[in-house]
Image 1 (cartoon, helix red, strand yellow):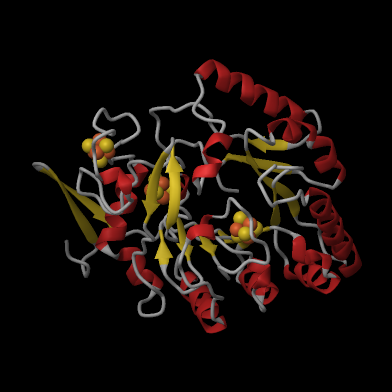
Image 2 (tube, protein in one colour):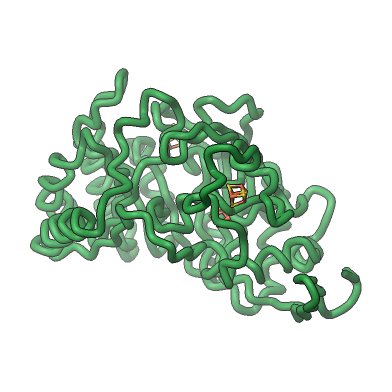
Length: 370
Ligand code: SF4
Ligand code: SF4
Ligand code: SF4
């Protein structure tokens, strides 16, 4: 593979595939900060020894300047692990991305919007969509009380700030993680969400990040049970006029990496570029009861390389090509899974691919991001 050429060559047994240089990047997920003002029990970084920090302002400016070289870039999504609004220049970064002409989305826990000044700055920023993460009332994790009521207040504060500032109200959405302990409460939430001005909801299953969370997952179930669950959820939200995006609950053979299909790159707070949120940081997850070490993987860092060079890196170009076609090993239906060493981490799989996507719950659509 020659990084200076206009193609990347992939070898499969006796075949060689030529992947042309592309500029298909359509969405950037920007992690402004990996710090957070909350300490949720289900947080990916709960068990992570990684240093946390904020994106340097020069790095954010540099990223947006370089991103202008990608003509298909449509969305800049401020999200990641951590709360974007703890960054001291969060609303400046959102405004800057809006001024560049991209559609901007923010995922927030909403708690900092009780500060009217921050809500007004967000109202002025021009964000098109704001997703509020909420865990529904009484998720029943030890040590965590429901914050749903205060999040509805934050939604109203943002709407009021938009009116005060004479700015359009962004599309307000909710992101909810479903668990065995909150399912019944989630089914009662739609009327409160509708009253708070929410237009749509993204539901996801839980990725257990500790042994104690294993019993809280709602998957895998049979196809019949999945249909029953999906119908109950769909009807509950649809009745209130809310558009709802549902996860799978059954294990299917179909694999579909939403990050690869949407031509997304994730930019960590320190400038490292990852292919998805799952691999942006290192932590432990439980995959259908098995403990697994997720190893942070990046294809380069903006601290030392340009975005175009990282995007064109043969390893990254080849990775994206394989992901779009789901051409990688599949551990979840492999009879060697009980004895195989590879699935203990995401480092590599039996096909020699690294990082390994072979054991991912996101590509089975069990786990979803807004
Ligand atoms: S709000 Fe999100 S980033 Fe913050 S602690 Fe909770 S799960 Fe982690
Ligand atoms: S890595 Fe191991 S468990 Fe996964 S598909 Fe290959 S042989 Fe099976
Ligand atoms: S398949 Fe999973 S691990 Fe691989 S890039 Fe997609 S979300 Fe990340």
